[in-house]
Every structure is written in C-alpha cells, then in structure tokens.
Image (tube, rainbow, N blue to C red; front, side):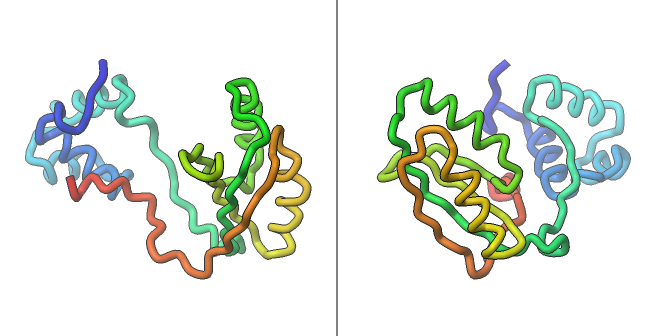
Length: 160
C-alpha cells in the first residue's frame, strides 16, 4: 500500500514525529504523548512497520567521539552512465565503509559522496585506493567540510 504524509491521520503523524525525535520511547510514554491508549498505538506501529513507513530502529553514534572527524564531499563524474555502469558503480560504492552517503545527482556531475575518516591522510588513501578505482570513475572533486552546522539526521517531520 502506497502512503504519503497527506494520507496519514493525525495520530500516525504524531507517532512518526515523536519516534523520529525519540526512537526509544516506551509504548506507554508514546501513548501519553499522542493521546491514545497503548493497544491502538501498538496496532498503528505494527501497521506503519508492515507498510514500510517505519523501516527500522537504530542507535545514532557520534562519529567525532570515535575519532572520525574529517568529512569530505566528493563529486564523482563517470565515464559511462548507461544502466549497467550505474549499477556497477552503485554496488561498488555501497561496499566502501567510509562512504556515509552516496547520491546520484542531476547536474554537472553524476554522484555526490559523503566520506568520513579520521584524518586527511586517511581520506587521501580512501580517495586513491577506493573511490578512484570504482567502476567507470572519470574524475572527482573534493570539498572538505570545516564544520557541521546541522547534522542530526532529523527528517523534518515536526515541521510538516
């Protein structure tokens, strides 16, 4: 079943908003926050999960506390953009642990990668040994982030 934000009722929206901010909230606390008893909240959660709206729960880890404080954004231009080449690139980039995000872009380059490492030396090794050797890579351009102004992973549900 296909859903979008506009087809959900206010209780479903409230559940998603609260969970996006506080994923470990108990059913009892969630019930109190949205104004429904526990049984309907549990049923709604099961439905939102089965419909694929809620795709999972995970811990958010502070990479800086782990010594991974260098963030680089890499524009990637491919030499071939046919479907087979895109598929090969997608599969290969997904296997690189230092790649935090990879997005296909409509613009003057083909992909934008977010890379996280512990140092510039580490980043240079990732670029030279992993990114540059990905299938069909023609060229790359790197932009190093000096500061993260907003990086909390919030989906913006509270603003909808």
